[in-house]
Length: 138
Image (tube, rainbow, N blue to C red; front, side, top):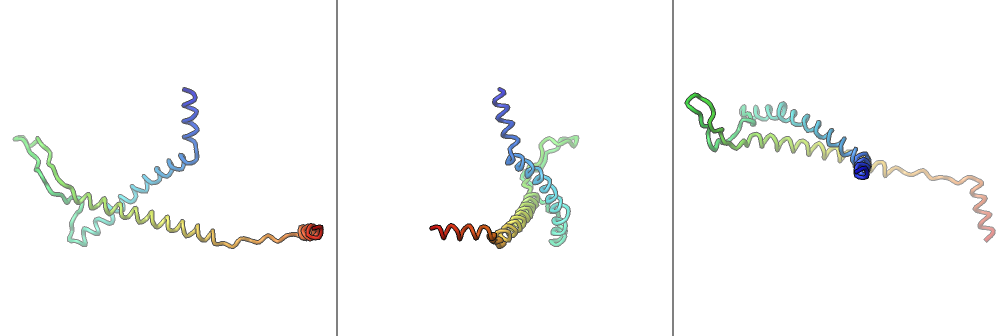
């Protein structure tokens, strides 16, 4: 049992696992920001442009809810919520675009780093003299 715990500890504290965990946490927080941007900023503006439509309320009712005589819901309504789907597609498109731009920026920085000319190391006088001596010996 101790061996398994030791192996798990080695696995859990490896750099890759920790980097992945941090990425997932930051990605989750970033997802909330993007969802808020889509739902609270972009979709109301898009809805206003297309005539005041609230996309989140767009749905096709397949089966209406059934109410009892007292007004309680006996059977819930069945609907296709295509407005929520539209919101989710826009949310995905924004996240994909932002990730694309981040990766594009990282690649540009990486290329600039690779293109930097490497400084030539000039040999010292002693190194030149040693090289000349070795050539003369041959």
